[in-house]
Image (cartoon, rainbow, N blue to C red; front, side, top):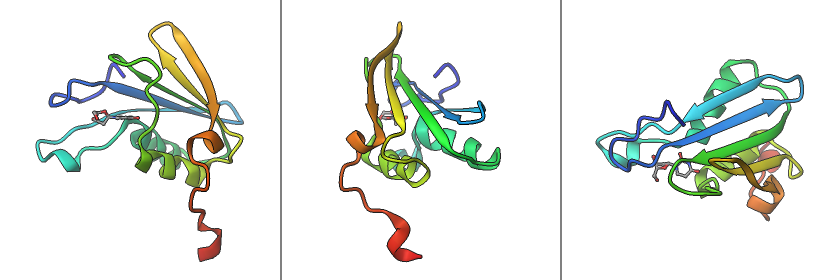
Amino acid sequence: MAKAYAPYSKFPVGAALRTEDGRVFTGANIEVASYPEGWCAETTALGHYIMGGGGKIVEIAVIAERMAKCSPCGGCRQRLAEFCRPDTKLYLCDNTGVAETVTMGDMLPYGFRGDILK
Ligand code: THU
């Protein structure tokens, strides 16, 4: 979150993904003057995760400076679901730590899965 580039919304967000072998990939939101071209903290973290070799994601954490329990937007839920299982834990944080624990299945019930495309 401290590394967010959010001069337009002034809403810094941080995300972290932990894989089962203990690697942690972090991300922050990055905004662009042409607003729709910016992207979320979770998406930055997923980019780091893929470039770092991927693997099984077991935990996700999201934090926003100005909002307790900031939860991933719809697009990020779909992107995270691509690399997670429904039981993957998602920690919604506040400035003191984990405020609520949910699962990816809670976040994206009935989500579209790519299996059918293979
Ligand atoms: N944002 C995230 O980075 N993650 C979320 O889960 C929700 C929203 C960002 C996008 C934008 O830079 C700012 O928060 C305000 O929408």
